Image 1 (tube, rainbow, N blue to C red):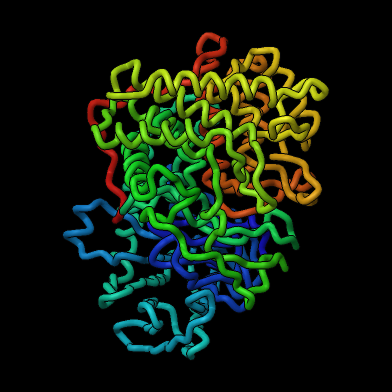
Image 2 (tube, rainbow, N blue to C red; image 1 turned 30 degrees about the horizontal axis):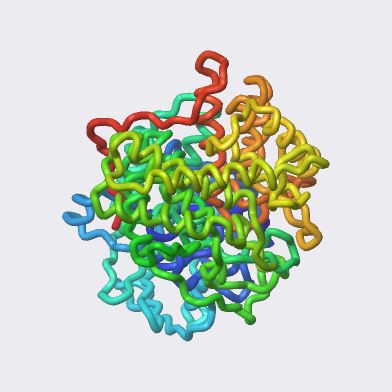
Length: 619
């Protein structure tokens, strides 16, 4: 069975698929990121896949075409070599209108570079999380049709089909140097499928997609350390941004384990408010203004629906996800059960999200955006809600299912919410604001955190008021400006976090608790450690070294999961994880600014350009 890091991702800004090193697509949800799976072998051998590979033993090297999400896998056999190109085609809005392109397609092309290689294809769709009945028919020139209860799959290929049955399709072809074969799988949910031609049309689809991704990547303004890793991370965020709404999903997968064989398996195919300000800061910092604006627009629209109360997570259209459900018939990744769909964290109370939403809006204003009166009233209403509820216990940033507590991070984000609202008011971006109430509450929160979250015995800030446990989110006190990174308290807190949560080579656990044995080091927390140094907690050399070490933990195509096994470097958790890539980008941005004069600098975002020319994503 493939390891998590053996996968690469392809996508079209509406859905995504995971492609293994051996040429098997083992995860695909259509038509949306959070739709039921069509291929789910990554979670159960019987849950469907689409493989394309030589019939004899082979070795593999792979990479994305530069500045794209088009994957190329070079396969060497004893008799020759082939190149497999995998992508979900993308195009401009004008091209979609004029060329009548399919709404959902995976295109696979195999080209023989040397010698002679026999390749074999196996298509075994198992829709609805392998719970739905299907009918597969060979319709000749119209391709192979897979009738499903909720949609139609159509496979077209110039390979020789030697088996069609309701359990799948088999095909093979022997390629000689210079020859190629093609396979296109399309999905339509409530209208007849558009069937694109193969051959030259397929090559043109690749050319269009490569140009589209490169045009988008060309607008990235970052020019600092590890630029290739930063651009790859930006491409991951773009792929995970749902084009019709602007929402950025946390990951395209569900239930990939944080602990092998354990039960820390969650559905991450949704958008978390918790990630908001971190994601927006990363997008604006890279010059991805349209994506940042779209995400904030989605964020503000979504939060209107439940204001002043905010939910923790939403689906890509801003709705509450379905109730959490266990797929008892799935064996799980390497036996890691249960496999869950939906996420019960949607019902939790996390007060930190108010600070995240307001800080994200503040980032937008700093780049030149304006707030309409309705948005001003909404943000002010969030501030009044914080004033009434900031001292309540909540579940906190990591969403434990063990009960509520008085979490330091939540208190600091409540302080952040009021602090940013007062900043916006002072600069004339908010109208009527209860200034005195916000100022007094902000000061009460600061005093409580400084008194009750500082543990004299630990000589450090701690995760919960009056407690003694440590949490990597304490490093964000400097990120949000609650503490200066160079303050005595922050330096001591960083030292304690490294001492008690360090996993070696710059990796950090998010916490160490009795209920978390075997959990991996947390990706974004590790990058928070590097960014703390870049913000002034250490020297420029320390920050650069820490950042470089962490970048080396990416897999062979530059992707990160949620967590890492500190002993082996193996990926753990859902994959690829937007949060980890956001952490990489933000650490790089802080490090690049630190390099400017070799001195600590305040967090900032560049001004928005007068006009953006980013191509539109498929919608």
